[in-house]
Length: 282
Image 1 (cartoon, rainbow, N blue to C red):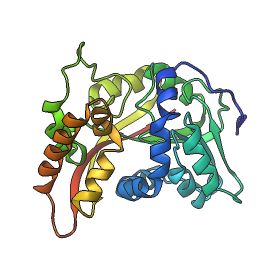
Image 2 (image 1 turned 90 degrees about the horizontal axis):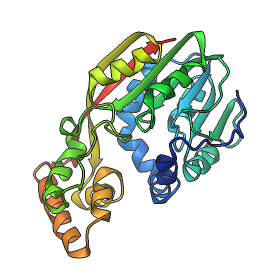
Image 3 (image 1 turned 30 degrees about the vertical axis):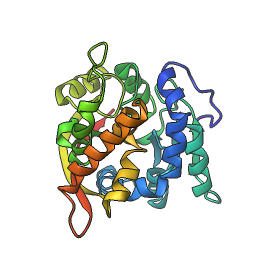
């Protein structure tokens, strides 16, 4: 593995600041809940990655370490990289006592790699690069000649009811942006456009590119109180609510709760999620 103490680069400064602020703390505090929510997607990602004993794996945007630990359990030597210090503290706690697994606070887009990783993998960690072509070129330098890239990214919000239902409900309460929002700006849905994503990977030099739609249902919450607590703390809805005054926020929360209530069953809120499951070779 490369130097685990590599200095974090500043190219993605806005994202670095975001994930080292309240967002990083919140994701760390909700780690168990988030891992449970994303488990169906993580399982498919890991199945497709098919890590083998003795392989070296680079986990990009490893967060609190769920996928890194799963790769390690499969026998791989794992290097998890992320910009978020609080999330990496949690990852290291979970990996305490294990060998052949390390975590670095570094910008994956500019980190120097050695070309001896058979697998570069990411669960929703690659959509935040300021220059995605340059970032994927850099990640390609981590791969051995027979190495493979496997990652999950989100399709468009409208294809993801688990986040879109509440998002649509609060939209009327949000101010109009002063400038049009760039759908390809760094963020959860930056790679929603399949052709755009294909072009990025082609420009970055990858071969055998496959971008498949993978959809499933996620158990968002067992009840409405749990759902509202979760969505008001995590993701795009949380950002929108944080920018509202108290009265508007209460109205928006009521609208979101009402919208989600329509989908509540005896099991809870199980809503659809749509991703791109991407594979490629060096």
